[in-house]
Length: 378
Image 1 (cartoon, rainbow, N blue to C red):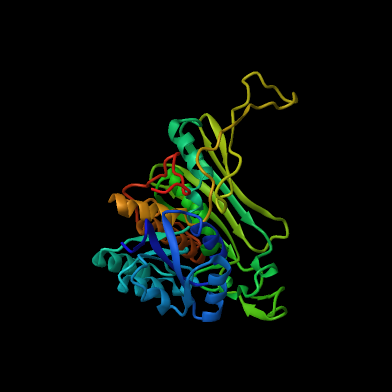
Image 2 (cartoon, rainbow, N blue to C red):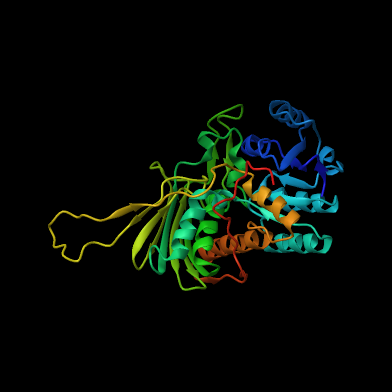
C-alpha cells in the first residue's frame, strides 16, 4: 500500500462542491495523507489543492499515475462513477466512491467483479451512517432497548437543490433525483437496522417537467427533469421488518432527516442520516392507566451518543485500516450494491405500480466500534 511516512497516500478525482467536505477531514486524519487532486478542469483541482495544502494537482492522470497513492476518492457525477472507478482499479489502486455505486445494476456488478479480480477494494458512501449517531442507535437497537424492531419511518422533503446549487441539472438526471441522491442515506440506515431488503413498492410523480437554476452564473437557465421528483415508498425486509419513506423535492415545507424505528417496547429517533451525529431519544409506551382526555405523558429517554464525531472520510479511513489489519471494512461495495439494487427496484416499482422483489442480499453487515477514533494514529 502506498505510504508517505506513516500515512497511507490518498488521491481525489473530482474537485466539485462535495470535495470540500472530504478535504476538511482527510487532511486532518493522521492515518492518511492527501497527495493529489485531479479534475477534468485542472484549474479547479489546483484551487482546491492550494486551499487545503495538497502537494499536487491537475488532470485526472496526476492522481492515477502517482505511485505513492494507494486509495483514490471518486467524487465525480453519478453517471461517471463506474468508469472512473474502473480506471482507478486499472491503475492498481483501491477505490472509495461517492454514492451511488453506479447508475445501473449491470455496470455496478461489473465494477465489483473487476475489483475482485484485481485484488482491490471498493468502499462506497454514504459513510454518514458510520458516524456516532446511527452507530449508537444501531447498538441500542441490537441491545434490545426498543424490544423487537417492527417498522421504520423516514422523511425527506423540500424544494430542491436548485435553490443553492450553481449547476443542479445532474441532480435531476438519471442516477440522481431525491431517490438516488438522498435515498442512499436513508436506505443504508434502514439496512443497518433491519438487514437486507426483500421487496419494495412505490408511487412516483414529477412536480414539473423542467426546473430553473436560481443561483450562480447559470441563474435563470432551465433544465429537464428526467426522474420522479416525489416518491412514496414501502420496504419489506428479509428479517420481517417494514418501513415507509417519502422522498420529495416538490415540497415548500421542509422536513428532512426524520428517521424513526419503532419496536415492541419503544420508538427510537435517529439523527439525520445525512449528518454524522445528533440527539437520540427513545419514547416509551403510554402508561396503562391512561384514559382520554387525560393529558398524554410519555417517558422519553435520552441515549448518550458514543464515539468521536468527525465527518466524510471515516468510511475511507475504516477501509484503509481494514486493509492494514486484513479484515473486512464496513462500507463495502457489496453493501452499496444492495442499496443501489433496492433504489433501482423502487424506481421500477413506481413505474410499474406494483411490488418488486430485490434480487441481491447481504451475508453480513459490519459496524464501527464505539472507540473508533479518526484522529488517532494507528
